[in-house]
Length: 172
Image (cartoon, rainbow, N blue to C red; front, side, top):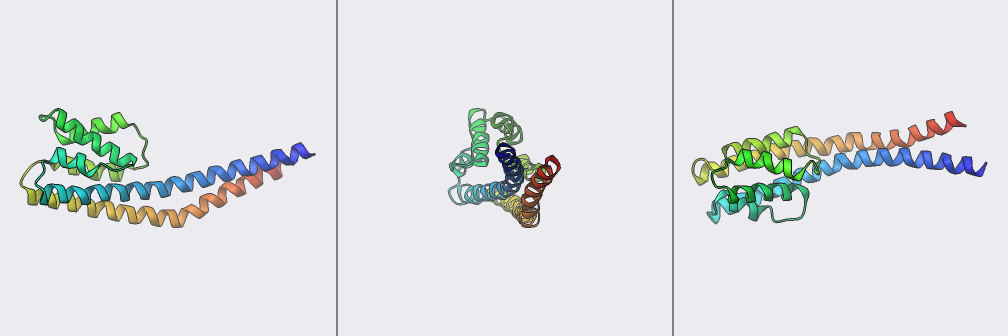
């Protein structure tokens, strides 16, 4: 009887853990979008006020801990190693090199890819406005991700726990 009770507790805790981990992944996505926004804010400073070339500015702006910073720093490093390479190609190679260790979805990656498509073209003012535009896009996406967490996070945590309870009831 005690073994059965212990196994039931393990099932409930395991299902609850799955629900909590999925809810945490949603919050991690919002945090990583915020991380990308911070990189873009620093990138505006490096490109606009310090007049640093884009590849070097991207490396300097992304010198922070985090998955998104590592991916963007890899992009800048690839651009500095091969000056003839387009920023969009370097961004794609950085995503392939870093793997999918981050929780960004297609909307965020597309916004960053669009920035990389136009990076290095035109003068500093155009570059700054492109970065600001991308940052504004990411801010809207982050607000949606945070709203999704507040709306769905509790749901996933509850579903995980309740599905564990259902399995236990069915097994007993």
